[in-house]
Image 1: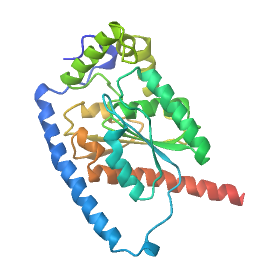
Image 2 (image 1 turned 120 degrees about the horizontal axis):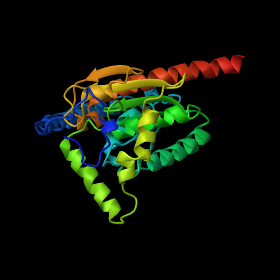
Image 3 (image 1 turned 180 degrees about the vertical axis):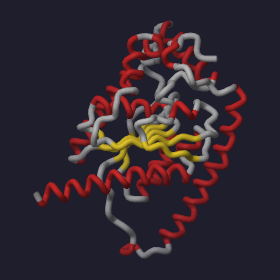
Image 4 (image 1 turned 135 degrees about the horizontal axis):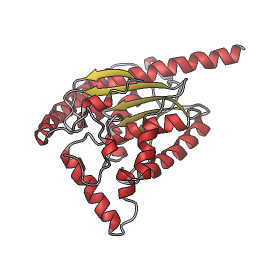
Length: 278
C-alpha cells in the first residue's frame, strides 16, 4: 500500500512496499549501535596507546558531505561523520535540519552548499547520502558533475521512490495535508505527484556522468524500503547486513563507505600529481 497522494510512476512494476511487519527488522539497529560503541571504545584505547607523533596526520583528498534521509537531519549521520574524520576524511554537514520539504528545494540548497565547499577546498566533493539523501546526491551528480567526484548511497530506493514502508507513506500524507493547510517549508502534493516529483525521479534515472564514481549500498534486511530499488544498475552495488536505520552508524557499513571514499580520493590524488608534472 502506498501513500494516497503518491504518483504511480514512483512505484514502477517489479517493486513493492515492505509489509507492515517488515519494520520489526529495524530492531537490529540497537545491536548495530552497540557495535559502533564497542569499536569506538577500542579505537579510543588504541589512540591513547599511540604516541602523538606516530598518529596519522594526513587528510584524504576530496572533502565529504553527508546528507540525511527523509524526516531526518544532519545529526543522524554524526556518528558516521565522526568515524570518517577519525580515518582522515574531511567531512561536512549538509545543513539540512529536517528533510521534510520539497525535494527540489532541498537539492538546490545542497547544490549551493557543495559550491561553497568546492570553492573553499579547491576540489570536487564526495557525497554520502542515506535513503532520500542518496537520491538527492544522485540528482545533483547528474546536474553538476563539476562539483561531485563520487556518490555513495545507503538504502536509497532510486529505482522506485514509492517502494517504502506504509508508515512513511502516512508521514508523506501528513506533510502534504499540512502543506495544503498553509504551513510553509513542507513537502507538497507537487513534490509527490506533480512536476516536482517527475523532475526529481527523472534526474535519478539519468546516466551518471563520466568521472563521477557511484557506489550503492543496500541490505536485504532493510525494513523501510524495498532493497531491490536501491540497486542502481549504473552503480557499484555492495550488499551489507544492516537495518535501514542502522546503515547510518553500523561500523561494517562505515567500512564500506570509507572504502568507496578512499578509492575516489586516491584517484583524485593521482590526477592532481599528473597535473603538477604536466
